[in-house]
Length: 344
Image 1 (tube, rainbow, N blue to C red):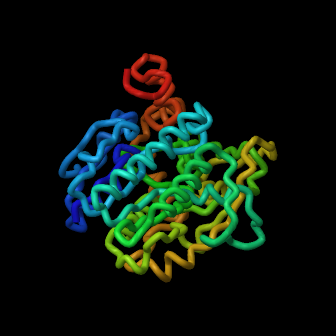
Image 2 (cartoon, rainbow, N blue to C red; image 1 turned 90 degrees about the vertical axis):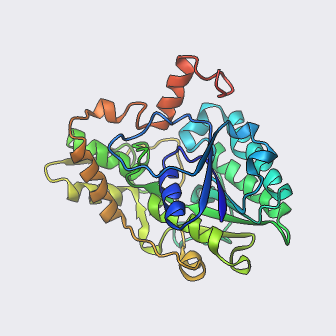
C-alpha cells in the first residue's frame, strides 16, 4: 500500500517507518521537524520513500492524494507539552487532525489509523482493568484532544472511510530519537547516571506500559487488517501482563542496576491519573499483533543504551536532546518558533 504517515520525526516514528518499509509498503512521511535534531547518530534509521516538511496545521489535500492509508501520529506529544499552551494543543492535536481526516476522506483514503492514548481513561477505578467500552475521563489537554479526535472520526466514518483508534499505553524503549521524559526511560536513565532512583510521589498510580516497537507493529496490523475487523474500532495497545504501579517500575529498574538506591518520597503532585487497562481485544481480534516486549526486557534495553552512551551526564540526559518540552522551549527562546509554534 501507499501509506501516509504524520509525525514521523518523533519518538515512535522511526519504529513505524521501519516496520512499514520492512512490510513492503511505500511510505510518505510528513512532519514539521521540531525534533529533527533529536537523533541518536549511532542509531540505524530507516528512511521513508518520500518526505514532506510542513506543519500539520497547513496540510492540504494534495499532500494526501493517491494514498491508500494514513497513520496519524502528529501532535504535541504528551501532557507537559499540552500544559505549555493548552489552546495550541486543541489547535494542533484536534483541529489539525480534523483537517487531516477530512482531506483523507475526500481523497478516497480507505483506512485512517489514529494514535490515541490510554490516558483518556484519566482517573479510573483501579480495582479492575478498563476496556475500550469504559467511561472516558480525560484530565489533561492532551487526553482531551484524543477524545475529541476519536469522536470526530467516529462521526465521519462511513462505507468508504474506515478509521481505527489505537489507544496506546505509556510508551518506553530505545528509539533513533530517544526520550527520557517518559516514566520507565526516565527512571532507568536517572538510575544509571546518578545511581539513584527517585519517585517524587507515593508511587501508587497505575500505568499500563508498552514498547514503541509493539506500538509500531499494531499500526501496521491496523492498516493491513480486513475492514470488518477494525472499522471504527478502538483498540487498547499493550498486553494484560504489563499493568504496573509506578513503584513497581522503580523496583524493576532498581533490580537491574546493582548499587543504586531507591527512594519513594511519598509526595503528592498535580497528576491524579491512575488506570489499569484491559488489552484482551487487541490480543484476540487484531490479526498479526503479537507483542515482543516486556518492561523487564525494556529496562535492560535502556540500560544497554546508557552503557553505550556512558559519557553522558545526567544534565545532558535531561536536556533538550532527550526531553521534548525543553526542545520546544529552546526553539521558542532562540525565536526559531513563534508563539503559535510555527517556524518563524
